[in-house]
Image 1: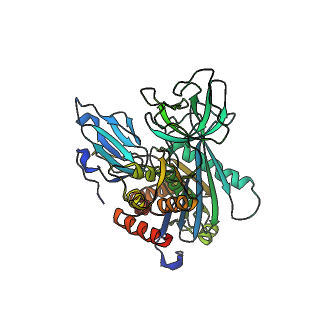
Image 2: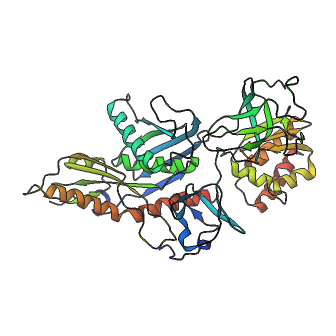
Length: 237
Length: 240
């Protein structure tokens, strides 16, 4: 049985993405990003002098604080903080301002599925708004795997809860280049959840994962263009 | 949109670039010296972008990315407005809205000796010049120009200081005079000090003029030159 998606979305269709910069007047950089109903607000403070005790003083330090929509801060928030921190450490240039700390605070406004990709986009846009030096931007996509083996991109909350497996991937964004050779390849972050049970043989599960990666990769260029267009139209003012 | 497969960097000049964009391929431009300003870095054989902004080029060989942020990246030769945070034996610690605090040596004043060290309290606003700004080190400031004269540097007394973006500071300091300051200056008398780190100080005989000038500058940040003139005229009409 094929899953009928809400709003008649195809399996490969993403929800409308909106991104705006400079939404908070006191933060050094801020951005708000929404994927359909999911909305996340990110604020960046820094670079500020000094690093934490266990961090390398030769590099800049990145600190992430994740604030859920409601409830106390617990283990799931700490996990999101760690994932975001590792992702952002990959895209930031850490030796431009050694011995400084950049704080990124992520506030979940509404969670309707695909929360981590939305947070990654909001954090990247906030870093751009603050002028923190970056190697490249990150684009992120989440997909879930139904029982019939179909891959759905950008699931909402209901779809995430119904399906058995969930993958979230972050890639370096596509760039405009004067070089004619290929651009950056690779995956920055991959988060999987659940069981990908193939119908018969064991190696079907790994194939499903790689198919998710391929679909995600195919979505990099359109996603990058959308995000850049949203960010561009504001900075031109 | 397909990126233009051209090797000339002119395809990116004056265009919006994002981090990761590769704008120059050094292997195709042999025997040339290129100066890189802010926002660009060398990554092996290519020059790629670190910050989002407009790519600018000035002859003969300087490239940089122009962006407007709330924070300042210290660079030598800039005039900035700093606030004194602490006073140590050898230097004052001054906040210039950068990644680290800056040091202002106690003797960096015209005719400064160990006997006449100025007493700056915490919170004093200073107009200073950035002498050195190297990565990993705190920037060094001075209240003298390159030839050792005082030249308007030093504490700014009275008046009102407000913070905005580095882009607005550059617009206010551009030559020919920016339309806002020109139109305001025709009717009102005030003094203004603009720091490249996004801080602006205004002083005038009466507080209402100070408030008018400050609000006008803040409101007209995102308008085009023609709109700025119109807005300034209308604000000044309301004051009469």
